[in-house]
Length: 369
Image 1 (cartoon, helix red, strand yellow):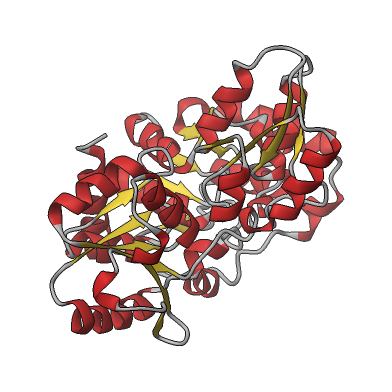
Image 2 (cartoon, helix red, strand yellow):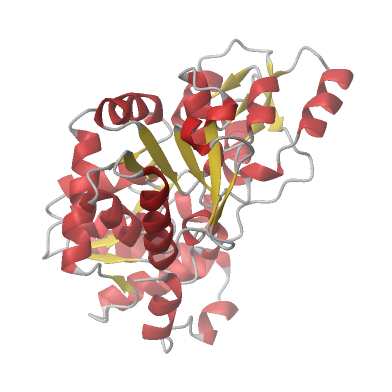
């Protein structure tokens, strides 16, 4: 189910106006009260990119797959109030038990990257790719994708990947087929393939809008097909940001997420997953300086947590992820009060067949973790 479908199916479930008139103190007190009352019935996973006003109430923080896995292990919880975006909540629904209800506090919390690969585009593109390359392609999808795309990948012998294990999964995929289709983030796919020694001239971009390859040369030389998608946040870190910082303060270490462009990753000192970034800064020596190329809520949190270091955004004009910021304190309170009153709002429920094949794709990855 697409984000649009979910919004339409829950069109009447918008935040009631009275929550907008409550003070922060009133809302925080009520959330604490309800959490204590409901106890283990409710579990709140919070993604690293969430606002502090939400993260303070999270039972666990982490990346999307990690949160879904922890939720699945918490069999006591009847309600998983997922503070993230829709594809994350879908993954949690796929992995948790049927008796558990996964709830997204605001159905508008989506991911522009995930939305750049819808199932209709993917199936049409796959048909064209099969005509060009024959049965030589295995699809991989970043976990930052819809359940439908994960299901497509599962049906076609592929697997999911995370930013932490992408290299390992590409290595596995090349033992299965001659070529890889990497969805939906071209930058993670390009950076990972490049690190494996695949030349850039052996990578083609598939444009799902124009339904054609962006490639100059003989297509028979292509080993990696990159879906033309990207993260709207990470693509805003630029070569210019790095050049400006190097000129101003060459002693600052630059660390970025591999969802950034190849040019930015190449010029940075370090690149890795969100966990890698957090760990690298946590273990860095006091007094060191770090320019971070990832989502602003996390950067601000790292700045507060590591007062013995200087941590700031690589892009001084960067804003937090707009869709991540849909989940806020009023929506969290509304969700918990609804549960308290036995009213389930904004439940995420993945179609059973889609869930089955999506789980296959996830398990192929987890079996190799």
